[in-house]
Amino acid sequence: MPTYLDAILAAHRTAAASDTRSTDSLIAQCADIPPTRGFGQAIEDSPTLAVIAEIKRRSPSKGALAPDLDAASLAQMYEEGGASCLSVLTDSDHFGGSAEDLAGARVAVSLPVLRKDFTVAANDVCDARLMGADCVLLIAAALSTSELVDFSALAAELGLDVLVEVHDEAELDRAMTSCAPRLVGVNQRDLVTFNVDQARAVRMAAAMPPGTLRVAESGIRGVADAEALSAAGYHAVLVGEHLVTSGDPARAVRSLQVGR
Image (cartoon, rainbow, N blue to C red; front, top):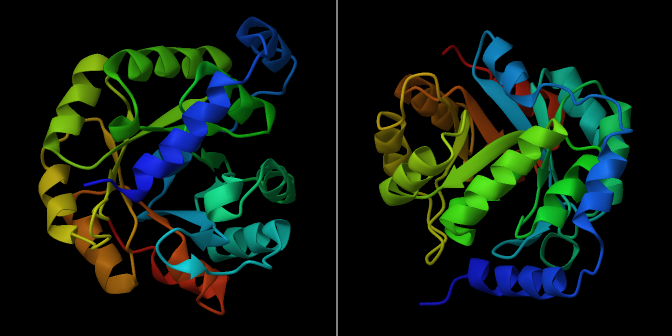
């Protein structure tokens, strides 16, 4: 059955196929940018469950969430609440995000930032660095094994951390075997039904090798979820909808920082 991911990926791969920019030229441009902030290090250094607070205007499944948000102001509220990192959607067509959202959020705070988007080409990795990201997302379900390897290597060359997102044990095994990521995110949301399956996230935490920084993504609805995921061995939660619709983002972030 086709998923929302299939349609989004098709659009991104079509755009990538028409991108005539030289990857070598983009890599050269990245050499002149100041060093990145340590995304993984910020998670590792957190004494509690780290919160990766997401700037998210809308989603394919829920529609508009906070279409008129100000990225810089929201980033500052997240930082005030004690977030360890930011995640910023830059997909325009499906999530209402932009490179400007990422740049504006990053300059407003001292937190490291994940570019939350659908990376399907080497130029996408370069673009993440050029727009100011400190970490790039690689979705195992969206990429071949060779792409996972090549994009991870390019990200490392550019100074970017990599968050590899998986949905099941097969994807986890493929990611670990091919590129051995330090940061692994488990998306709790089923790509077909959109249902959240926390039991799967809990199960998969135990399957990750020692030394892996474990991130639970999607469907974190409050402190009870944070406590369950922390107890399962997760080091961080990536939270968007719950925070942008909370009415008090700083307080909402603070409530998720449970012991780990």
